[in-house]
Image (cartoon, rainbow, N blue to C red):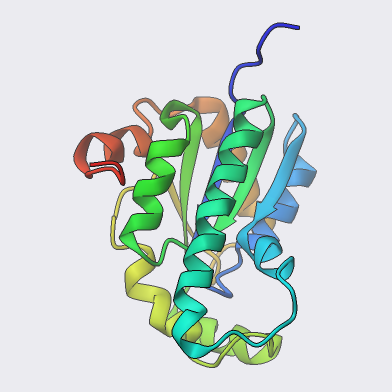
Length: 189
């Protein structure tokens, strides 16, 4: 069996409650090829339901993110197409992804939403600490470079999914990941 070309990665980056998962569900419905929805939340949900001491929470979250990045890279390397649902809250997370993912195969999508709407969604969900999205808002988009940006407060997940499908077919070159890789130090630097 000949090695497969790396799979495409649609990388949805936005705060908690910004609408990434809703967009991902629509993408799986509208895309012509088979894609897997790969949400970072699914990796957190796999963790044993135990209290983690306050001094160990960040290390636990960082290990989970590193493992998630490697799982994404492995699935793509095997030729699988992915919709990644992630929150780039720390610069090292983006640098780690830049090191691991095939830059020319990643469509980086900035998922935006106004703070009042994020807070409303967060309250409705009830499964996130209050203020989580507000704390993430400035960090998540700090790198500022995307192939496509959307606002879930003004566009439906279906409309956004169709915009992403079009952008994926147009295959921007160089991709945002390629440009970021050229300008940001990688995790290995």
